[in-house]
Amino acid sequence: MGICGLAVGHPADTIKVRKQTFHEMRSIQIAIQTFKYEGIHGFYKGLGFPLLTTGALNALFFGAYGNFIRVLEEFHKKYDPENKDDRKYRRSNIFLAGVCAGIVQVALATPVEIVKIQLQTQTGTWEKHNMKTYLGPVTVFKQIFRARGIRGLYHGSLVTIFRDSFSSGLYVLTYAEFLDILNGPQDILSVLFAGGMAGLISWGSIMPLDVIKSRIQSDDISNREYKGIVDCATKSYKRDGIGVFGRGFVICSLRSFPVNGAIFLGYEWALKKCQTTTTAFST
Image (cartoon, rainbow, N blue to C red; front, side):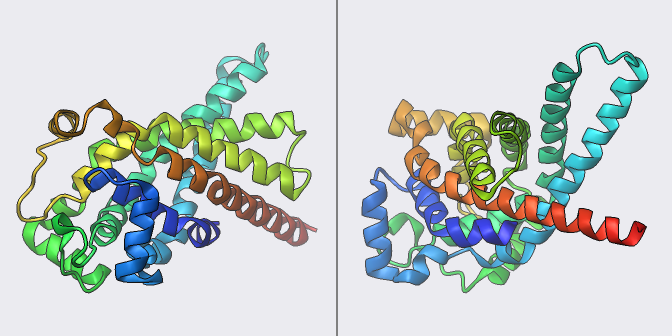
């Protein structure tokens, strides 16, 4: 699931992160400069850790989601045995389970994200504010750990929780609602469309938080510019205006539809395989 998403979307994610953290530049300018000075490799900076951990991250998220939704459904059956408003409960269960799963995944996602973003914002010479000298993800990990310890690897975790909790609830709820409209995961196109819309809507809802998160996690390890969420938001607004909180929306929208369509296609395929295997063992 996660590898499907990474294969489709990492170059666009790199452009998004750079747009959010660099001084005012258009996405097309960033793409041109990246290719000119760094080649194709520049678009895939920071891919290593996400590629290694994507399976664990998606297993953690969807596993937690499945467990939370089962607990919530059992709770409602216990306290409302007549099941008077099943559709209302179903929606609230899906949303709350998604919120909880989003919070759970932050434990693994934050170190991965900070390493990824530090590498994505390393340009070499063409962007003078981002002339870092990391050789790869292991170097970033070691330098952060030496400088800040475990806390350094979880820098930006609070804004990540705010971002991922609400967006994850909206993510799975939107997917479920669109599947209902399309009469379930009947075919590949239905899954791709529902997954794409889930990604589009959930990402669009938290773009200001994503900008703040990118700026906090791309900050200089040894000389922090931002003291926290409010400080980052205030300084960003004073320097770049209200428009800064929408940076990356267009490229993120273009990226999120195919990426999340691919993720849910992988999810539905894996779910069917697991169900087939379970049925085979039980017969």
